[in-house]
Image (cartoon, rainbow, N blue to C red; front, side, top):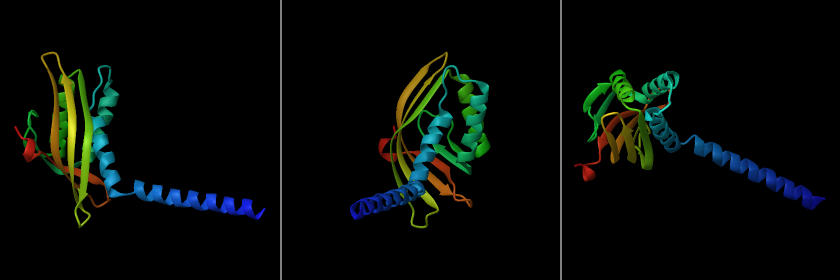
Length: 168
């Protein structure tokens, strides 16, 4: 009987320890940023049979991921400079309308959180594919992304700049 009680106590202790570590990991800033990166890819993705409702929801989601001012400097992306979040969403919506397929995938990412805990740098590799009536594009991008934490503790994208090492 004592052996069964001991085993039960150990199982409960391990379950609590596992739950605690799992909870801590899911609440980490690094995990939240990687979730934002994957969400960004999902918001930009468009399937051939995607409806207007899905597109509208993705547009709203994209806007919620961006900081008030966003800088974009990546080759093969037709916009460059500093924009408001609304302007970026507008450009993304126009791109979505002009393409039948947009597929953006995060291939690799390394997240470095600044000591103040309010900003972070994500060194990412994306694969993007877009197909329209006129042409198709399939390329990899190595992008340095700056994120900032807003007052409610959510990470927002502030800038997207092509890595200096791989610039063409």
